[in-house]
Image (cartoon, rainbow over all chains, first blue to last red; front, side, top):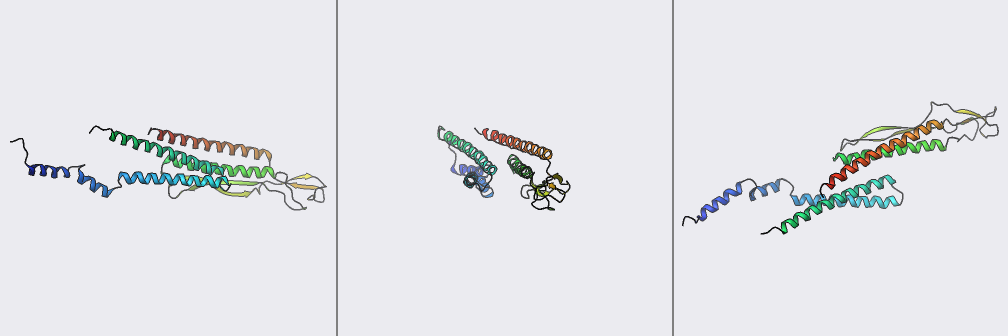
Length: 105
Length: 137
């Protein structure tokens, strides 16, 4: 009989655990205070897309001779770096997702 | 701001400025034998260029820009004997521009070297940035 634990004890233990650092209560409060991981990734992705769009625009204008060749090169290199970074981050995210999916439950 | 990214911007401004300088040099070289069309008028006066620091208010980085393109009023024109020229005076002398080929040559070399230095700086910063991103792989 003494191996059974009363429900009230379990409930109070759970209640205590939510007050611990890193518990569900903590995450909600933290999320309200700072930008969530998802938002951060979304913002970064949007910025990357913007950089790439701008570079494309500069390339178009550059072909007509309205912008100097140097500006076109700068924009293209910036686009290349941004794309590289975006691809690397995406690879990391996919890798993390795969690891979670392959986790034995 | 990302320092490596700002290096790209700074070097790019340096390259633009040196390009502008080379443009002025080429104008001087091209106009070295431009004279006036009438007696008493001045021939082509060589152009000079000066640079200044340009501080970006948002990021605080110092880039460079062309401060002014002026005319060289300190070097005198030389005279050449050519009585058949439309701008020749009554003694037959024509005022020729104050462009000195040696000076322009030195200026051209300096602009090219400076451009190269900025280009190397750009390349180094870009390489460092690429290497840093490659760490993610």
